[in-house]
Length: 257
View 1: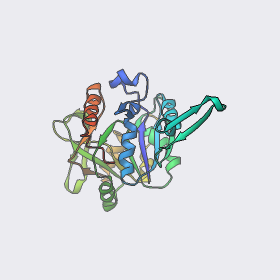
View 2: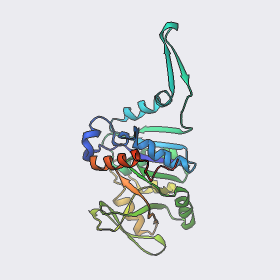
View 3: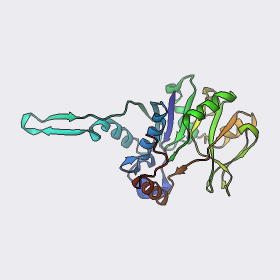
View 4: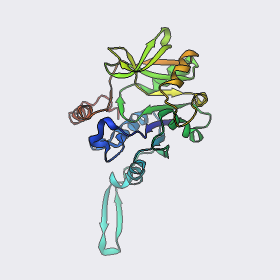
């Protein structure tokens, strides 16, 4: 099953870092937060990733193109014709497709652009700026149990995120974007989507979190998987520092590998 990660936004709220690189490439513990997210999924057996790139997309491509080189021991022997010897090569057994989905494309438009790489398969989708300790295997089992088009992971968080009104059995009754949550359940990403989702996405201007999700709610096709553990996005330098402190202290809840 493929995992789609949105990694193309400008990251204006963390401009101190995103001025030089896409926000998903901002490092926690010396590795991009994008890498941390992928490691989470790989822990549950998911190794086929589609990265929806945009802003400074070349940075993501260059990082992966040099991944094995940057994570391995290397000898450069200039006495023998500039030879390079790789020692103890370390690389993740992943398949990574990086798609330039446009500089100003909205979230729904980015998902729509990678449709040719997904086809008619169920797939996972999340945002490239948040980590958590959600049981992704249990999330997938829940999605398969209700036979709806979409499942999102819901967490309780006092932030300005997509606010959810959740009914019985996890059915989402309403979706309100960008309001003060005041402890309400919010959309934390980590979604499972059926290929029918592409019918709800029109073009580059489609914001996934508004009309498509609202229409899914109206049709009773959006379910929520309640997560009571750790989840944290990285929208600011303060939040980056929080994640960095957890990692350096060896207390990163999302580190399941």
